Image (cartoon, rainbow, N blue to C red):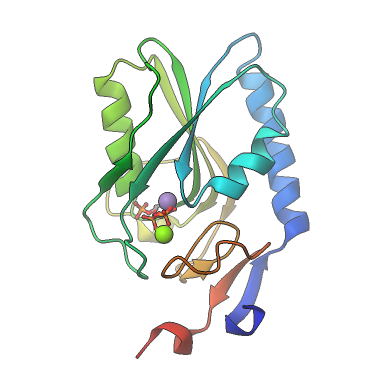
Amino acid sequence: MDNDIQEVLFDQASIHNAASRLGQKITQDYAGEKPIVLSVLKGAYLWTADLLREVDLYVDLEFINVSSYHGGVKSTDEITLVTDIRSDVKNRQVIILEDIVDTGQSLLFMKDLLRKRGAKSIKVATLLDKKEGRKVSIDADYVGFDVRNEFVVGYGLDYKEMYRNLPYVGILKKEVYTD
Ligand code: PRP
Ligand code: MN
Ligand code: MG
């Protein structure tokens, strides 16, 4: 897999630093509270594991599976709710965990859904923020790193379901996905 990567942007050590920085912030901001942590599958699976181990709070961990890329290199503008959550979010504080915010459309979809269901507050903690990719006006509350407008994979992020198990985030070589 390493051969398909043009450049490593964030290695394990820097991701760990980001997790510990954001984990401390979240621990302070939610002191005495018991938020629902909503992990967005599949991309956020590693970020969830690493970030949450830096959060010293009682939390309810929930998973939702939404998909917009459908495996490709571009967001499709069509968000599919693959698997919903089971618990009631009414009057609860929710922290959404994302691996990346790009167009913002997945996030908007989930925030609308949670608002409709009566969540008391909704915040977002993302490892990567690709601000140049935005199509809707939405922002994350906790950001690990800003990332430039390149197609990145690894540490949860996929191309056609591959590379999620790379321990770092890197830019995929163009020749791997242009035909
Ligand atoms: C990716 C990523 C985010 C979303 C961000 O998920 O993990 O969830 O897209 O893109 P957006 O801001 O343009 O909506 P994807 O749809 O690829 O599903 P996956 O997590 O299962 O790979
Ligand atoms: Mn995702
Ligand atoms: Mg994907």
